[in-house]
Length: 485
Picture (cartoon, rainbow, N blue to C red):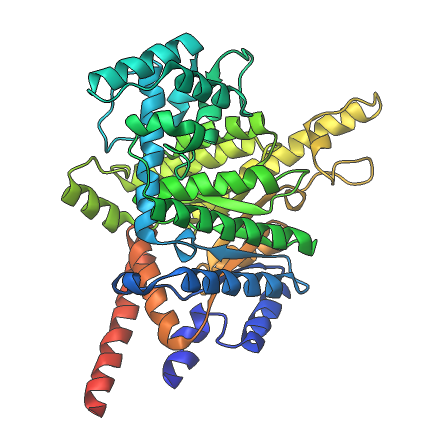
């Protein structure tokens, strides 16, 4: 372990103790690099049966401790996984309910029926609306076709008016929008209370699962609330997980963004994976949702981290693979998503997570062009007192022109990887972060190996070389253990 700590661990990890971690943070900060703290301990799939509320509460405490460290004089983010706050099995089942809620809305709007494993692209739904007459008649028809006990018209009307009372509606206040629908029909509420009418059409979560969902949401909400109360620049960054968990992760993160990403603040980021076929559609839908609810989304954009898992899972369960067909398609999805987000920079904060030099070049060029164009407009309008998009940002006034560092846009790379990109960005005046895993050596090295294996298909040659490096480390460790026995 000593050899590992002095070699591989020292390159890719921030430290075991708080003092070691602070030293790493100070070293990066001295070179103009910000930090994403990532406590590199996670449950093995074999340990699922041992997970309980105490484990999830302890995980939340560990995340909070990282926030406190990040807030101690550092402009830092703290990474977290939603699967650290609730059972994976519950998260997956909650995601199935969320997908069923979307499919039912599409069906009530007259769209073709979708198979149970298919997700409808959200930007196809975001413009749809339901009238009361269509809602009542369609619900009654679907229940009758399924040979289920018919709900009373009074209960159906109550459900419609509950939907209509939600924020996120369109111009016609007599119709229910997609955003009102998904805002109210949360996975742990479907089939309960004034939403009991949906129990006939959407299999609800069990009472135990509903409690777990509510508890996970409470843990994340509490973390956001405590982080906001610190009054510092510390923030939370929700990592992506595999696609069967992403429905619930996105839903939960959007719920807390609606509460905490207001008044110009970007407290919590959600991660979008460019290699998923639905990502560009999801971004368009979420931008519209943010506009309607009056908050700003904070986006961490990455290429993706579960390529092998996604393909294997799709094959085993017999559903279409959610991942794009080629690496070139993923590159295009990533770069075009960056372009789209920067076109809406007055609505979003963007964390561009990439080790790809060409994507960095394109993004920095777009940022520089935006600043130049905005500053030219500001100069020409200054005399007349007109306001432009530039006025949306604090740096844009008569005394200070817009720069890339004044925009809510940052870049990020893993500690120990692509240092040339990181320090080039920093020295060129762009905001850039290093993802800094930390924790005990004996659990951090396996954690890193899993991350490298997940990313190797996207990272190309560098990823393949890292996989071989860590595989060799594992082989030597096993040989050493056998020799001692």
